[in-house]
Amino acid sequence: METQKRNNKRAKGVSAKLRVERLIPPTARDQFASVLKAEQLEDIPPGFRDPTFFDEVPLYSRYEQVDFLKHHGEVDRLLLELSLDYLKRVRSELPATTSKRFLALTIVRDDDNECIVPCIFVCNSNAKRRMKDLRLSVPSKGLGKHVQSLMRKTEHSQDYSVLEDRSTFPDEVRVFVSYKTPPQGLIGLEAFTNGASV
Image (cartoon, rainbow, N blue to C red; front, side):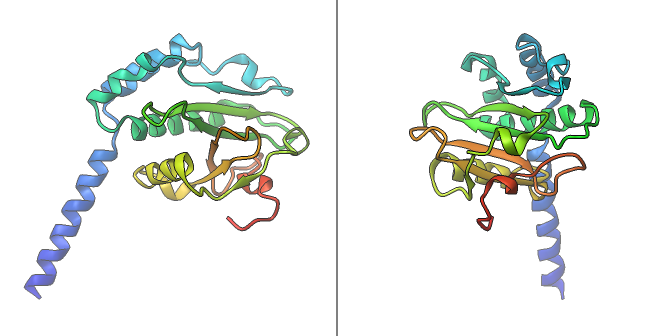
């Protein structure tokens, strides 16, 4: 009985430590807000509200913009968490639409030695038609697996799906991250898996 209590205490301690590690330091949030401001993304761009908007916008444009994250922990994990926060903010600030909208993060990496580059992907109307050639699948290796493992380290990993696109650009993998259960008015990633189980 005493051993079980000790094990429970240890498990609670590990759980609390993991939660603390997952938190983004306020200074990192502030500095990332400055990056978004430099990219003209701090305030949700008016274009994102345009019913015909369809684009993928990087959240930063130069690696040195996110160098500060090295002082706060694992850069890729922090970038993913900060990007998920931005995705939530965009979703909450976009007006309701009668057409189904597609909203996701896409993630690329130019080089295995560089950090990930998250983008906000917004398609406000006719997403299935406009993206009819997109083929998403379960991450199989490389960047897809990396992002999947980063997602497991985030506080809300159970809320998001991670799928990869290996067909749009044959030499480049794009990883898509979006809601497992899409909020009302959004199309989920499964719409682009061609019935493959994910």
